[in-house]
Image 1 (cartoon, rainbow, N blue to C red):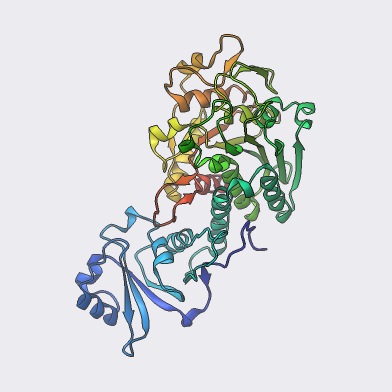
Image 2 (cartoon, rainbow, N blue to C red):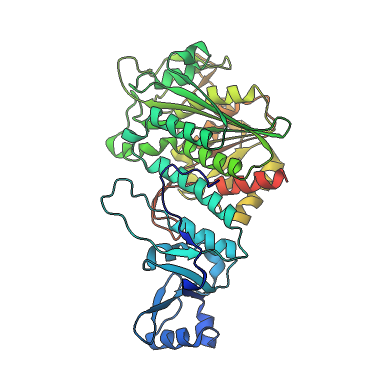
Length: 463
C-alpha cells in the first residue's frame, strides 16, 4: 500500500535503469585530480566549472544532445546533507540517476525528494519535474514514507484557510485514519461542553465553523503507548486582542502543530511500528463575533484548573490544555505535543531550529541524537520552574498570558506542564512550521519540523 497523500502527485523517483541520464556529484577535488568520467571532466574544464556548492553544469553528447550533468557539492559536502534537493528544481525534465557521489544513498535520495516538493494546487500551469532513480542500497520504502509525512505537513499548512478550516482539517484527518484503518472519532460544537472540553469550545465558539476535537487510535494494545497532540488553530485573528494585518498574513499556518503531528502519525502507521498510537487534535478558528471570549474572562479547564484570560491571542495553549489533560488521563509511555505556540521561540532560536521542552533527560538525550542522525535540527530549552510564578493569576489559578514579555516560550511550556501530571515522559515542541526562504530541501512555505527526528527515535525505541 502506498503512503497516504493529501494532494495526489507523481513520485519524484523513477525505476528506468539504463534509460536514465547520469549525474556526477563532485567536489572541487574531483575536478582538480581528474577522478571522474573523462568526458564530463573535459567539459567541466573547458567550461571553467569549479564544483561550487549547488552548482549545476549540463553535459552535451558528441551529437549535441543532453548527455548528463555535473553537480557541485563544494569542498565540504557534509555541511549541506540535503544539497541534492537543488537538483529536483534545477535539472531539466527527464529521468536521471546519480553516477557518482560522496554521499550516502539514503541522504542523496531523501534530499532530492524533499527538494522536489511543489505546492501547485492553485496554479493553472504545473511544471514537469525531473525524476531520480533511487540507488539499490537505499531504503526506498522508508524514504518514500518520510517524504509522504513531510509532504502531508507541508500541504496542510500551505492550503489557505478558505480550504483548510476546521471542517476540512477534520476531513483530512479522517482520510488519513481511513487509509491506515485507524479508529477515528470527533466531538463537535456544544458537545465539547457536554464532554468536558470547555477551553476548546471557548476559543472556537465565535467561528461559523464549529470547534472540534479529533482523535485517532491505531496499533495494538500492549505495545508502547505513544500519544501525539497537535495544535489545530486553522486561523488566528488574535480574537478581541486582534492582530495587526501584517501579523495575520501567515496565520493559516497556526495549525502547523496539527499538520506535523499528522505527518508523524503517517510515518508511524505506514511503517507498521509496534506501538499503541493515539492522536488528539483540538481544532478551532480564533475568530471575532458577539460571543467571542474576552480579556478578563475566567474559565475552568478540563483538569479543573481555572484560567484567567489576559490576552485572547494566547489561545493555542488554551485548547492544548484540554487536549493534554485528556491525553494525560491514560498516562501514555510517551506524550508528544507540537504547536506553533510563541513568537518568543523564534526570537530565541530563529525559524529553522525548533525548541523542545521536557523533564525527561533520557528522552532529551535520545532526541538530540536522533536530530543529529537525521539532520532534522532541534534544540532543548529549559523548563525552568523559577518562572512558574509568572503564570499565576490574581483571580484564577493561572493566566494564559503572563505580563512582562520575558521568557515567553518557557512560560508557555510551563503553562502546558500544569496539565500533564500522570505522564512521566512528555515533550513539548514549539515549532514555526514555515520556511521563510528557499533551501536545498525546501522551496519555502509550510514546513515539517522535528517529525523525521521523532520518527527515527520512536522507530529505534520499539525495535
